[in-house]
Picture (cartoon, rainbow, N blue to C red):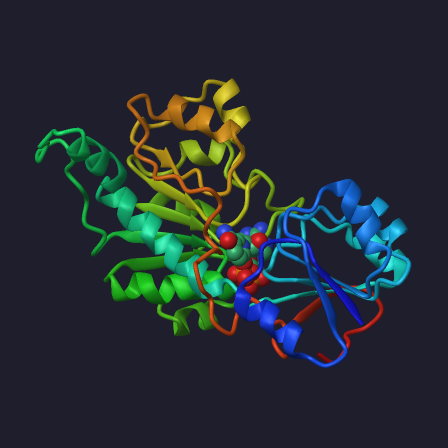
Length: 311
Ligand SMILES: NC(=O)c1ccc[n+]([C@@H]2O[C@H](COP(=O)([O-])OP(=O)(O)OC[C@H]3O[C@@H](n4cnc5c(N)ncnc54)[C@H](O)[C@@H]3O)[C@@H](O)[C@H]2O)c1
């Protein structure tokens, strides 16, 4: 069986393929789209992260392809309709980056609350601006969690340990279940009214696209801080900026996983240099994610294709 790994992959994950009998693995991270069309024609399985664009053209070229393993969760880079047409099974590792993304969210929350990026920059520049970078305590503050699925729940656990109050907006969950995890299920409006911090852990679809738009952002509490370690498109940054919406200058938007356009909004709504820590979509990435990253077998979920193969 021939396997092509076309994105960066952990050494531990690659070793699993190399040690398995009958598997011939090619490791070609950063392969060009044209080389991918050629290489994919020869393989039975393709392993990707978020970098490789598995388009209709790739499926057309993939005569032997039976399965795509996505090390991670999002499948925005895979044409699932084309996978279905070709009968190619697409599997994800649904728990692969839950912990690391939840931890990253808390890192963003605390960095924003204590203005760590700005204070660090200033101190390295030789300043000692002890009174300029006054942080806020998160203890006793209200965290609004939009989407309490796998990642959202881990964030809630950690926020409770920080002594935060947690309100949840998730129309697909029962109040009792949310109560059991130590939070309160509320309507979106209520969350906007009450949250000092808001964090998003929802998929991007027609229902959630621009869930936080100019109107909803304007109804957040003064000084509310928003963290998005999920995916771009959940906040309607360009339109809010274009419409020149008047948002509280203290509202800051974390740029993690958002489009370049959000940078514009961040500077529009926060007329001083933004308070938002930024990271390059690194929520699900750590140097080593033992037993979760490359280890699709046994912990996979099928999102397209004929049927789940037994891993
Ligand atoms: N930043 C990263 O590196 C990274 C890593 C993993 C996942 N993600 C993203 O984070 C998101 C959440 O991941 P997960 O594993 O927790 O998913 P999940 O499916 O376990 O949870 C999603 C939750 O969102 C809720 N939801 C759906 N539509 C909603 C709506 N309109 N309003 C409010 N809640 C809604 C669902 O009921 C569910 O509880 C995914 O979209 C994924 O793409 C990002």
